[in-house]
Every structure is written in structure tokens, then in C-alpha cells.
Length: 452
Image 1 (spheres, helix red, strand yellow):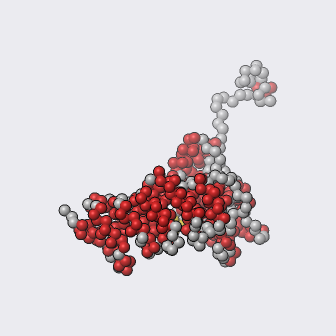
Image 2 (cartoon, rainbow, N blue to C red):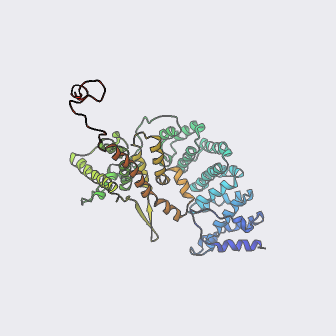
Image 3 (cartoon, rainbow, N blue to C red):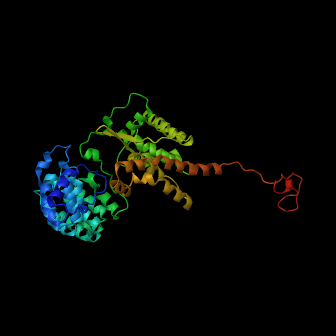
């Protein structure tokens, strides 16, 4: 039978794990609460911070805190929270220790709240407490009110210098649909201590929580608000390459509510191609910018003409590709450590934007559409993102590969309907002569009755 020393040595040798995969069941290796002191020693041992990044030992603290989470022992709560200041910049610890707090459950709420309210801790260490409290609600929905009260207590006496922390707190309240905290939220914003890029400004929060229908003031210009250089410094491409030109125009004249890259625009046009009925440019051109009122104030007719020619070139290319069954989605790519990753999120978001321009569908057509766009929704909705977090890289790639076939299937479904609707009428039966009795039964000649 394995000893305590054997179990700890096992963690030292276990090595690298998959950040997106499910955690293994560590308890199958006979870990018990008697191992908690040794496991905590692994977590707090700072020598692992300087260990060789290629070694197995560098992963031991991660495996140790996962075991502590699965043991669900309250003994681990305070010691783990005390490591937040040291580990808050660790790319693995930041998300995983909040998950551990969720597993440790209700006994962790008060210690997390105490840490949150202590301004002497690092800001992102306290962000970990926000995330940990939210994870507890995911594991134990009955703790929702208690966690929301922790957030509200903090808002009554916040660290007004912790703008990011305060913005992320608002995001958690939105995730919890904390309508009961609206007065505290309004007072919180009145302190002018919230980074609104984290969860938007008060009017957007009120809309999200159902306390208003629409804005009464213009949406903030986040670029100007935070001193980001305005897009008019972009250099216009010297070539006539359609994609380069469109990227320039979308960035130069775009904003938070508009399509901002050619991948999303390509997905937008793919949705228009699949639509059961033709969607006119008078509808889809303003939709690129979010609405008619958000359309650019073009400096001159030449600039408008150049954009129009470029955008119709891509639109026609997508339509032709769909009709000839050779369409290839314009997905983005990103290289990390020599490996190229396909990025489909923007394309999928653009497709759903185009889908919003469709008219009402029959029940049968709606069912077909929903089935076909499931791979698209996976990469463009909060529900989909949650599912992706639990997938391995190969599983994510497999889901990406389903997008194009599913979209082509949707296109073919409505193409068949359009062709049927425009098929020529074929007369059935014999032709009636002008002087023959009218087939309606009136007794008159055809030329004096229905032919008249």
C-alpha cells in the first residue's frame, strides 16, 4: 500500500497537464485528509517558482491544490487564500485556485470576503477572491444570496483605487443577475471608481439587469476614455487588395457595436447567403455598423465609393462561393510557440449578426436552422464558451471543422426552397380553345368568359 511519502512523490513526478481538460480523479490514488499538511507544503514552497520549466516538479503545486480541492477540507482554505498575493500572476493559479475555492464551498465564503475587503492585498489577488466566491455559487447555488451580500458589503466601503477589481465585481453581479443590488450598484458607480471596460457603464448595466430599455446618453468611447490613439492614424493600404482595404475601413470607422474585422464580415455575408429570402443592401450595410445611426460620417463621396466597391466585392465573392459550393470561410489564424491555431470566434459572431437580419421562419425551417448553427453558437455565445472550457484542443479543432459543412447544409436547405418557388408553372390538362365552352361551367364560350 502506498505511503504518504509515495503519494507526494507521485505528484512530483506527474508532470504537465492539460489546461482545458478535466481534472483527473486524484483521490483514486488514496489521498486523504492526513495528506493535507504535505500538500500545502507543496503549494507554499516557493522553490518551485524557480524550478526548470521543462521539469515535472514544476507542476507539483498545481496537482497539490487540485487534490486539496477534491478533498474538500476546510483546513486548506486559509493557507490557500494566503498564497493569493504570491500566485495571482500565475497563469494557472489565477483560474484554478478560484475553482478550488468553489469545491471547498460555503466555509470559504467568509475568509474570501475578509481578504477581498483588505486593501493591503494585491488587486489581482483580490480578483481571485471575487472569482472564488462566484465559483462557490456555481457549485452551490443556494449560496447565491450570501455571496451577493459579500459583494454588496464591499461596495459599501470599496477600495476606490482598485478600478479593475471594481469593474470585475460588477461583471460578477451581472452574471448572478443580482437585481436586488441595483441601488448599491448605482451608488458604486457614483463613486467613479469602476473600470467600465470590464462590464460597461451604469446605463448598460441597468439595461442588462432589466431596469431600463435603452440608453439616454451616447455609449462611451472607450478608446478616447483610456487615451488609446484614435483609429484615424491607421495608414490606408496603398494596394487595391479588397481584404486589406476592408480591414482598414472596419478599423478606421468601426466602434464597439460594429463589425471590426474581415473574418466577422465574411461570416456575416455567409449568413446572408444562407437566408431564405434575399436581404437587401439597404438593410445589411447599416447592420455592419450596428445601426443606421452608427454609420460612418464619410469624409467625401470618394471614400464612401471605395468602401462600397470593396464591401460588395467580398459580398459577391461569398455569394458566388456558396452558389458554386466552393465557399471557404475566412477564419483567422494565430501562431503560438511555433504552432498555428485556427480562430473561428469572430467569423461565428459575424454569422450570428447576419442571422439576426433574417425574417420569421416556419417551425420546420427554424428547427433545421438551429441544428445547423450549433457549431457556430459554440464559438460565439457565453454558453458555448463555457462548454469549450471543458474541451481538449483536439476536441475544439473537431468542433471547428463542423462549422463549414453545417453552414453549407443550411445554404442548400433554403436554396432548394428558393428554386422550388421560382420554378415555371406547367399547365395540367388540355388547352381550352377560344370558342370552346368555358371550363368554369358558366355555359358561355371561353372567349366571352374567363379568357375575357
